[in-house]
Length: 302
Image (cartoon, rainbow, N blue to C red; front, side):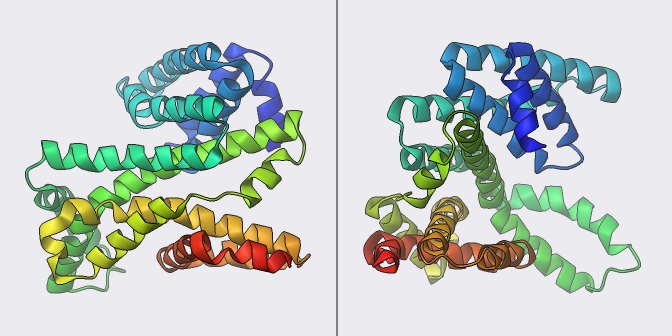
């Protein structure tokens, strides 16, 4: 089915734009569908070229604006998708096309997330307090539901903890959309025009020691008492963990392939990732960081 979506999108500019707009609109109810929409933009840009990628983004914006306007009465949603998803995906796709480096492109996607963090701290004098003001009304409604088990103090503590994390989590989510779209689009391109090419590229992914050192520094700062005064730095950690979690997945995929293990091991990893996402992201990111020095894939192949 997914290959069919990619094949249809490659039939022309408007087909790609329609698929992108419809998937993005459906993502309002099922957010992961935005990864597929991003993948279509990546596929179009890589296969047909930068100019066509720009035209698809423009056409998708028009289609989405009409959908959002007539069905929801909210035209501005198209602008939100354009700024937070389609334009960043287009930029990173262009970078991948020019550099031919998946690692550089993924790091660029994480860089976009860091720019979001910096912009937030520039615009808002205290992002944590701003998020508290956003979250308090939401939790007041949730706390009134019969199944809510936290008392007032526990709810307040939860709001405080979440408000301190939201900037980093939102930025990491935006980066993840670009990263996943990049991987999906590259995988579609390989499946349609170079079978097996993406697997080899993903198995060999290596983000580099410099990025790993930055991630280690961020992890250390996040557990030190000074973290409260370095919130801007700490907010960058979720972004670094996201990109290195992908590195960790690349290591696991490569080892399973080299050792000719059954796909059960990969399924188990992804099930755990869904069930225990925060813990698994940290574990995978740690594996990805260590890979820059330990080279587990090399030892596994020997």
